[in-house]
Image (cartoon, rainbow, N blue to C red):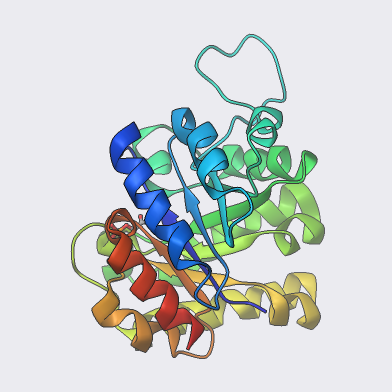
Length: 249
Ligand code: 13P
């Protein structure tokens, strides 16, 4: 099953608000579609204790490319494993734009996640300038290729891919279903070329960027869109659950 919906809380939350949100998700169950929440590091223990045994998985929003050592402020994949994470988002555009995550570092982080059997959610996507400059496919290809060149077909094949056009993140400006589908089909084509048709067919490719209950069904109805990576709407239980339900149907 390729379907998946993941909430990316970003730097939001607090113990009380999280308890209410996680409790509501747990109570609603899986809604017939695999789902997960990627929470800030300090709340991983809370996610673990409130979601363990439920249909909802949890994960982190980043990890270090290093396994262990003198790296002040960093969090390793092994540490994420201690808190039962299934997923780690890697290469989110906010990390790329604001925190210096280059294509090469993102590829190293994918390797670091796989080394401890975490599933990377590898984010790719173009800025508005890049889209208007007609280089969307070249940018997405370059971002994917960095992972392929470092870790080979096995690394790329082990990722969930998330296409997140930077201009659609947090802006309320969603890519049209046709715009998103075109890039998703391109990504699946690259996977087929580098990793083989079987891998391409089974890889989950999520769309992210202003997904809301109102637009989720149409986006998820596209042939190559397998679900979503949800920012703002994942902070509201009813909205997140409605998006999960849209992916299930
Ligand atoms: P929004 O859903 O808030 O646009 O964020 C998308 C995103 O960046 C998910 O990783």
